[in-house]
Length: 392
Image (tube, rainbow, N blue to C red; front, side, top):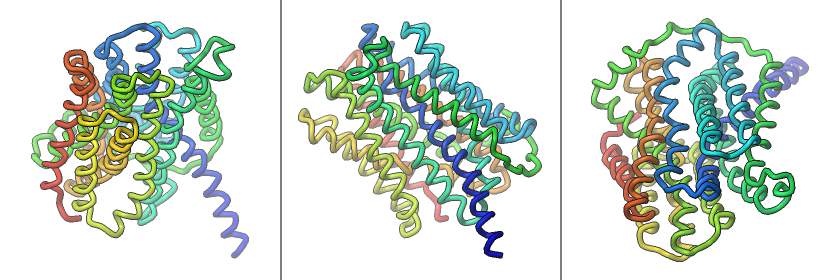
């Protein structure tokens, strides 16, 4: 009996570790904010031109989320995740051959496509390993692992730009090569991991998903996801620009602002799993949104480093659990149509396209305070959404 328990635990670890490494690879999408700032510097782009990169990455969520659900039903979840990893690895190797505007557009497009497929298929894959009351905490831990990759991106880029890799001509693009190698490791481990999958659910079509937008609460949830991702990508991209604009620091130093955001988002992901067990989602959501609103106020008013870091940290912590609350609210509202709702909520990640584009044009016209104004609109909407949250 004891030997059987030890074997089962070892077998579970051999399955869950490759899956958690996939969550780490999922976090690679957040390098787009750091990378777009370096490309802007290298090529002398305007804010609106540079913000096309994160917008392009998240555009593909609009296109690929529902088709990915249909693909999973045809070939299985594990194979779908493997496809996403292959596309991601390919996207990360492309910048090794240059950082021209066209090359980076292709790289970021493939990164967005790979991540859209992964976001849609990886969470369902976890349900083949974990069920019941342990599922939520496992998915939360996966988000924590994902956040670590997001936090490391600006650190590795700055290291590559200033230390070892200039010798080899890569500079900050060493970030892409390091993450590509990790992606290939993830492919190898997941491919070698046996995972039993239940019979796929019936595929959902685009029409079935879009019909759900006619339900007012689902539409509110969809907009909530768009605002969450828009603020996430927007802060990731804009925080270093605010530091450079107001303090005159070089990008290699100002890029740490992105790290501050992801440090606090990582802490928020970790603590959120425990806080939500003790506090109602509505109250925790309200506190989180108020923290983001305070952070935006600091970004408007302050021009010294420590308060700016504090504001960025407040936004990072506040935004860390918005997705999980909105997503769960949508699923609980339509328990018989969870497949359709899941696809629709993932489509809401398209907010990562809308917000950076609007922020780029606002920043060109008004400076970075214009970009902060666009994000603040998203925070105000989430404050309104707080009033609509239902008891679970």
